[in-house]
Length: 87
Ligand SMILES: [Zn+2]
Figure 1 (cartoon, rainbow, N blue to C red):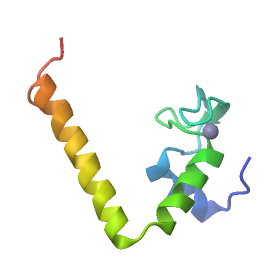
Figure 2 (cartoon, helix red, strand yellow; figure 1 turned 180 degrees about the vertical axis):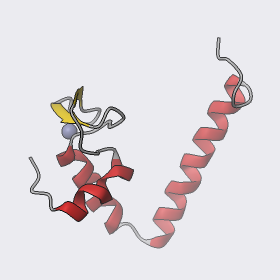
Figure 3 (cartoon, rainbow, N blue to C red; figure 1 turned 90 degrees about the vertical axis):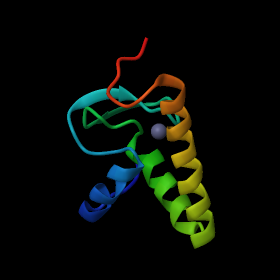
Figure 4 (spheres, protein in one colour; figure 1 turned 120 degrees about the vertical axis):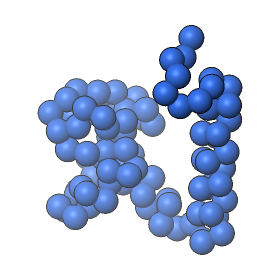
């Protein structure tokens, strides 16, 4: 388990971890963790992801952002507009 200070906990939300009391399986390491209902990674993996992100250059961050936007746009294009029920 990562040694996390209070500010770190809040910083990790955008990388998939928030404190809580729900049991889950980490999407990165498949380990068991206790966190917020909507968390998708354990604190250790979220911390590693944050550290990796912080090492990216500004251009690499922009490329990642544009790639993520393209992925979401493709997802909606394949399934119809937001708000419509998916089959
Ligand atoms: Zn993990």
